[in-house]
Image (cartoon, rainbow, N blue to C red; front, side, top):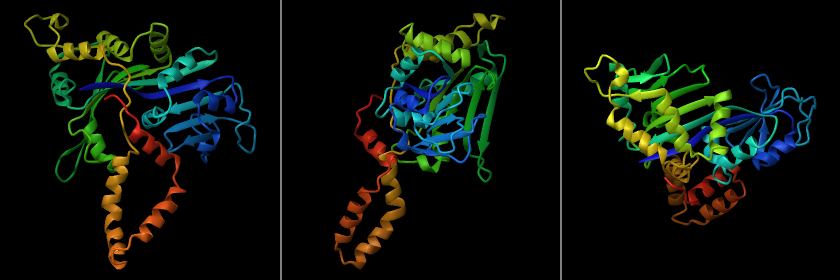
Length: 334
């Protein structure tokens, strides 16, 4: 089963104050925390929730408030990471935000990532793609490809596997990696219902390529799947070996044709990710359950203390907890 998501959104508002940017995002200034230092040449930085959305700027004001004035020549830079896209999409529409940004003057799109997920690796299969690449069974407008692997020292077991088609310093490149291995390596994201054989293909669009992508989405009224298919068709093709000396005349691999046909139909999907209720439940089971059992045993089964603790905890819920509840209740297509 395939799905497509926006996995990164980064842009700069050149002529605006902080209050305008918060209104644009539909978020509250109070839900952001100042960081000790800026980034990308900006002196100030705010983060939202788990740090999944960052707002960077430079201001002469000593105390940062919603009405702080920024230097117009540097603007205000917003970075919504992959995790931030998932969290933001719980209560907001990323495509609508992109459309709103595109309609404004003085907006620079820095980076947009689109990702196709194959949760069963039936079409986008890392092993098959890797073997085809090593054998040279592909054609590409990109002049290079790289492979990065990491392994466990004791067993030699893979901890991560990633292929890059095109330079990572360029304005457009493709990244394919074993998402299941990434999830296993990050213990914070391990829970029982995670896909066990998950491969992701990402296209990273920067600067003019990002702007062109938005033009296709908004002016051209194209779906994410349509744009992805168009990019892949133009830059990469996996083939079946034949006797012809010209590889460009070799037939496309059947799985590649199937991928392009299926991607064409894809619409934006919101997938439940990190900070999930399932993850929190698993953490309680692993870390807290023995302690709770010991207390309950000491109180001879009296659960009054537990009810009081839960009620008191309700007043300490953070934005992360509230978002996890909303995400759990929200019906999303897969």
